[in-house]
Length: 225
Image (cartoon, helix red, strand yellow):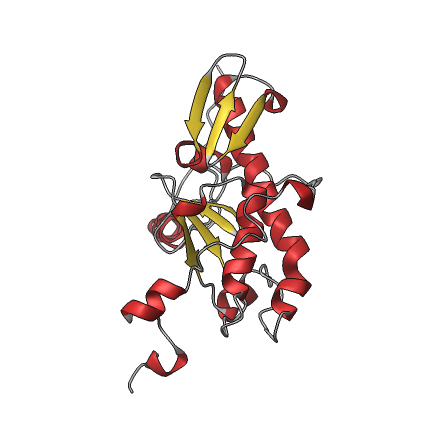
């Protein structure tokens, strides 16, 4: 008969280990139960640092350049949305802080803005962020259907497998897509095929400026002030 090894666990070790697991769940640390999923402010799964998708198919695009009336925010969002192939009518903007960027090893790159420099300096990598998100969303749908991703297409936040006639939305596969590895080879569209980027669309910052909900620097209040 094989003797069973004796295992003892002190009360202190038990409390420390269970507290670590509980803290991991609260803080979003990577635990052995599955890959960590970063999330937008409303809890939507982040596909890439530039894109998060709500279950209702709302697309949250991150903006880190300052809007000074020159249309930078809308222009960058258009570039990301173009490569993402999302529904422009369901795009909203979220503003990560420089502190959040530093905490994530400067994930969003440069924050400074001067004239058109915000678009000129970041247009390529934000486009890749949108394109990578699209590829991950399509891959998630293909995995669910057990078909090659190359047989699936994406348009207007909907993924289609033409051979079988199946369709799904970005919102339905976002959680699964957020758990995939980001592709390293991310081809970009030919500007000649653009339908959103570079087009005269309504600016995303206008409504909040008109209805008074836009927050400016003077609106911020520091703790204790």
